[in-house]
Structure formats: structure tokens, C-alpha cells
Image (tube, rainbow, N blue to C red; front, side):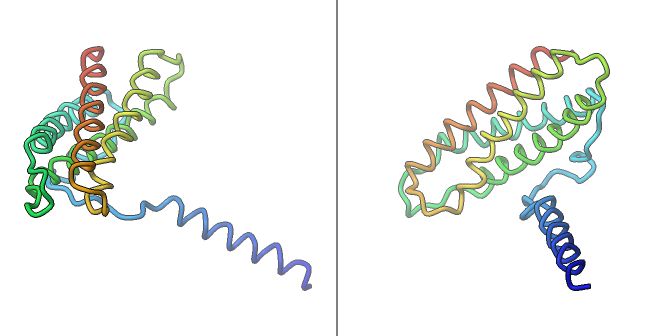
Length: 164
């Protein structure tokens, strides 16, 4: 009897760990309507999300480039919000693209390239969002935000050029 209880308890613990890993740590505050961040497999849908993400990302990039470098003056919250909105939209599009790749019976190489570029753009777009509340010096944070967000926007541009 005792021998069976151990595997069950390990199974329960493993299940709880897996469920905790599947749930996002915290949601990003966003100003875009919830209907805009719905995950869909249709290319037209996630292309629209990427175009909107590019608009928010460009706005954030300009804001970070023009932000004061002294720690005494806060960065405009609208700049951080635009970065968060871009991140949220890229994340939604990323999931839609992943679903499209998983459903792709003919393994479209352009879809796979798109998925790789969007995944990289999403990872880069995270830097200004995740590091905003860190103890990183302002100048270092701004340099990181401009570099990573700029590269993320270049990747979005590349993807949007190849999509119909």
C-alpha cells in the first residue's frame, strides 16, 4: 500500500508543476482591445496584429530614443505602454503562427521562416518590457531598449514584406 502512494504523490506533484509552468507568470498591462489579441491561425488575422504591433513598437522606439537619460526624470508611461502593447500583439501573432505551422501539411518554408523571425522579434521586444522595472542604470536600459526594440521592428518589417 505504501509503495503505491509514492508514485501517486509524485504524479500529483509533477502535474502541479506542469500546470504552473503552463500559466504565464503575469499578464502585461495593455491598452489594445481584447478582441485584437485573440489567437487565430488565419494569416490575414496575425498579419494585422503584426502591423499594429509595428505601429506601437515604432512609437515606443521613438520614445526611448528621445527619453531623458538622467535618472531623475521618469520615462513617459505612454512609451512603456506602447512597448507593452507591441509585445502583447507580437505574442498573440506568434501563437497564431505557431498554430498555422503545426497545421501546415505541406511544410511551407516561408511560414517556417516567418515563425522563426517572429519568435526572435518577440524575444527582443521583451527587453524593454521586462527590464523597465529593473535596477539597471537609465542609460544602459535605454541603450538596450533602443537596440532590441529596433531589431524587433526590423524583423517585423522583414516578415511584413514577404507576407501578402
